[in-house]
Length: 196
Ligand SMILES: Cc1cc2nc3c(=O)[nH]c(=O)nc-3n(C[C@H](O)[C@H](O)[C@H](O)COP(=O)(O)O)c2cc1C
Image (cartoon, rainbow, N blue to C red):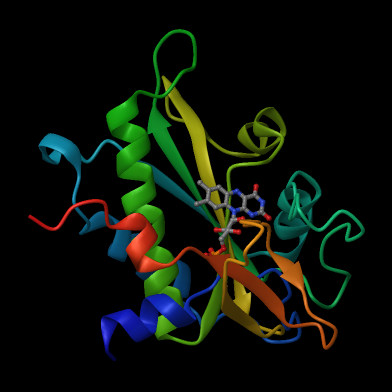
């Protein structure tokens, strides 16, 4: 598939068909995609945990913060929840803080997995908003590691599309009347500051 088309279509997805389980091996395949992604100084410090069993899924779900801009929406209802998660763990200091390079590595790994997921028809949502302590308590955490990002996955049950940013400059995503999730993206000419 054309990579620009893949990136365009792989919009964040927050409503899933919970009746369709992920094919066996999907989550470890996604971690393999992250494993082979670039890493500063090739340190490969990130670690991953996958969650697919319904009881554990429910537990993770309770600790996630969904769609801050959709004020009247508390998150997906039963039947529309993710059917799997990949949690990314990153090396941290004594204070539990993750360094800048590792945050970059986390972003690269997460985007690899989100694109890989969509290449197989699976929607995904990255989560920087969660109750970190509660999720970390669920996991066998390696020493001096912190939770960096969670990726929710499942078969998409919502339409998502890119719309232009309007004259008011508002970049907040919203739901159109028919329920399509609309994501305003700035124009290329407004982002490309130099073509030397
Ligand atoms: C680092 C990062 C953290 C995010 N955290 C959350 C989150 O906590 N909850 C959520 O619903 N979406 C979260 N998102 C999804 C963004 O809201 C989404 O990427 C943004 O609205 C743009 O939509 P798009 O991914 O379709 O381009 C996060 C995305 C990124 C990259």
